Length: 103
Image (cartoon, rainbow, N blue to C red; front, side):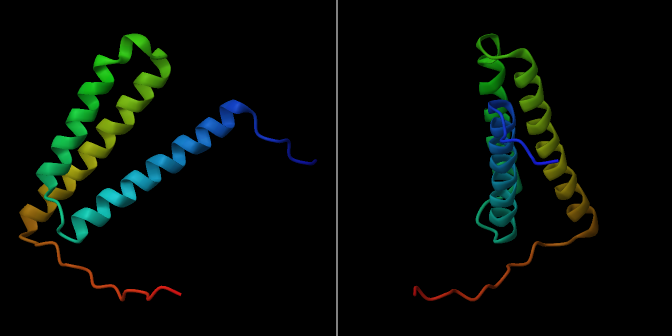
């Protein structure tokens, strides 16, 4: 059976998922390279959660709940990683990557 072209709902869902994955990847990259502290990331997520809650009355309730759930999940995951690394006495180690020269 041939696949149908995605409707608007599926396109938006795909865009949202891609944005979420990109955001999480950037957060992890910033943490792993020691460019930002975990506390700074958690504070930024809390600010976004507060802004989303403030805007909740204007947004679709289902979409708002889903966004807040995802943000809380990301925040809890980062906080748990911090607690685990603190208990183990592990310091994040800088990653070294070879830079590619422009073609």
